Image (cartoon, rainbow, N blue to C red; front, side, top):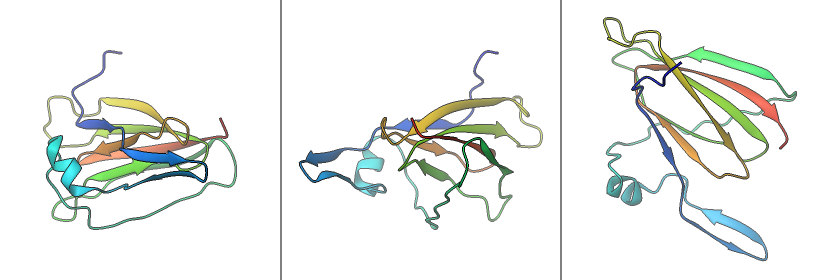
Length: 124
């Protein structure tokens, strides 16, 4: 399947590493604005799955409560799927996925009005 133009953005946060470990700001609005992300995150939630290959989703919010989602994995890895659930969209129902893990340190920005599911894939 050819990847549809679903509104996702993979972000590599800037941080620092020293003998104690690492540090990064997961929601640095100034940095986000410099790469074209202009919005505020109104909610900060975390989830943890006890077992590998646990699926969470497909979930989304509709207007006026729709919101962007910024995904980050701090332990193990997850496969994140975004689905266009906009009624009338030319790509309605099309989807893309990516891996976000503790070792790659990526964040994934999923635009509002897209459904999202997560497969917790366990340790790397």
